[in-house]
Image (spheres, rainbow, N blue to C red):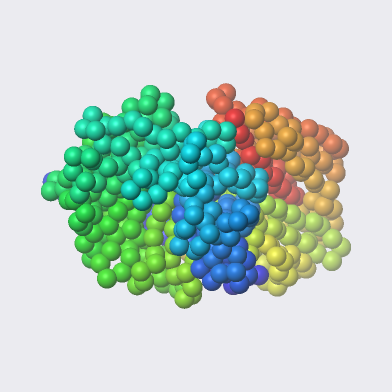
Length: 544
């Protein structure tokens, strides 16, 4: 197994709100993952963005110098460079896994072209007539891309799709125009920076509704006269930095209902910016003093990410100038950059309720010499510290299996010989953090029975799908089956089968809807097949 580690962190913070508000408890329960490298010789990896459902992108540099796509279903995959552009960076990603960014001729960004990667293939986005340079900064789930064209004093904001490109000509009521758009949400609200022709020293926090074509600005914090907008959440939370002219910046969050509000700086810092927000109004960004301090603002309190990690993780998120927090998903997955064991690496901090989808396969097979238990995880190249426990009753008590596991690339196999014939044993796989167990899955088997090896869950077809998809599975004998659909956060979306099923081949249909009948959002989903002897998982991508 790789030396990369996933560490579960459980920290409870109690904060007292200002103005006499009552105390409130906020629990942050995370694991942190080193996203890895695109090429073995790469030395520096940067995490730049997270999609609403927690996919990530950025760049991996060294021998590869390339953008990447990461998910906890498939790990990190390097993306190809465009011919003539040997350097690339991923700036934005949507839930279907489409990545946008820039291809350049040098590592510092010369000659940029706007790029899109879909299905692992790279293509240049079209440029408006007469333009030769451009940048792609973000993409929403409808495939609309925010960015800019040209450069320097002539740089202007632009909107791209795979088939068209247009310069943003709309101006605010005060006459300001945008020179770049950094973010766009599914409602079509794009945000970025603007120029005020009447006061070139002032920054303009630019808002552009791509549906109505109306432009406006966020205003400024008290004592400031302008702002820069860097990100926008699905519920319309706009974040960035506010300052007076070109002076010190302070993080803010803006909503249409509440206007612009300050984000409290982390303890020990004096300036900073906010980079992204989710629909709960949670904000991530980076503040600074002598070092770069990535933070999470949960609507009440600003937490240094370093304070969310226990000792011994190997991560430094407070004593360097490279750390950052750049993206946050709807379920709170945070993506950014830090130092891991002395190397600059991209990370994902994942709330622990997203952990169950990390388990791909979990099976117990009865043999004449014991019960063989095996498991496989979705994460490739990450050393998730887990423990196998056994009980003679499904309710426990549970004890660790003493037999030594034989490790594989993404899991392990154990022969539990300390068992009695014709007796059922229950097994569970848990995160081994020395505290409260996070159960990944449970199976059971009898020493004399053979069954799990015959349980097969085929891949979804079609995949990706725009709605309906079929899933074939095979059972070696009649047994109870539960087949469910989960989103990328581990939440139950739909129950397809729940009860006794005959042995043989079967096909389950999913119409792309939840249990309530509403269409499921675009994104990555997991089919989970559970029988008394086996657990199987398959992935499907839902598009529209």
